[in-house]
Length: 390
Image 1 (cartoon, rainbow, N blue to C red):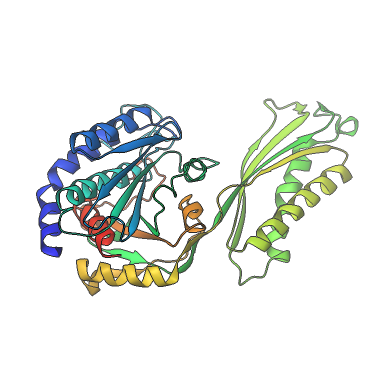
Image 2: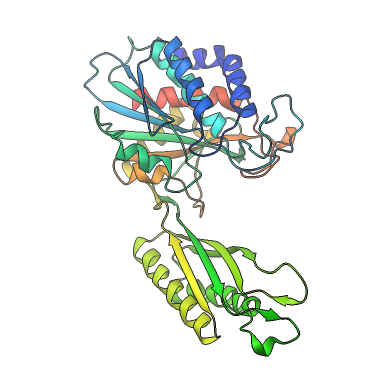
């Protein structure tokens, strides 16, 4: 089977590079993936793979091998793009101005489609059932994974394990990485509005200076992590937006802040929420203003089942060779794959997509992100091989 899957992945590589070009040229934002969803459905239909639509744009399909009840394995790919204006000078550049597949979800969808074609063509040669999950809205709360789970994606039939890959431009094409246990952080969004009586900039004694108060708050909030969290417990609090005022001689009556809080410990995560709210309200009140604060609770931390990750690593070594399989580093980034991995054993692994010699090194979430497209052949093959061996 290994040689067969590798050969099929090689045979179909050009076809699925074109699939990736189509998806990359036509990106859609989170929960707006209607054309992408229709494209995926058309491909599955052409191969005779039955599917259903969940959460408006999600597509869930089943491929039955021999003895289909013997095991049920899920493979997941996300489909949404980011609100970034692409700067790459390529023939398949985004046609949707200000929207770009800057996180590689076009690659993920392509790899799962390619794996689906291979698995469907070889279903007389492997046992079990493969559930394919093409998921919307990974980049935006509440996360498409949470919506699909609510609509029953992990039921009827219920998968025993779930896998997903993610492109990694910092790793050379042909390489993969795995990590058991905690691998990515939880992510919560912070929204704060400082409100007060504004006034003339030359008469600050008649106002409560919203700019000054918000500035003090930004600095003060850094103490939440630096002086309350165990330094051996990874955590990040970043204020990423500061919006208030529009001229030189007016102190505004309102300043809006936005930010993100990341953690790898659920107890500390929610304790930190309480501290952020308390510190915001008390500091702002002490300086003569009012605060509205909202913490939008987002994805939990990504936990890779330890035994499953070890098993997956061995399967990957069979496919790619020991010299091409590494350990994934801890990351404070977030992924809504976490919702699946908190329900059933999951393994979220990395697909090398960079090529230093070709200058393909731009990171995800940047306007120049791209991949060495030979990664698609590796991703297709690995997804198919993982599914039938796990």
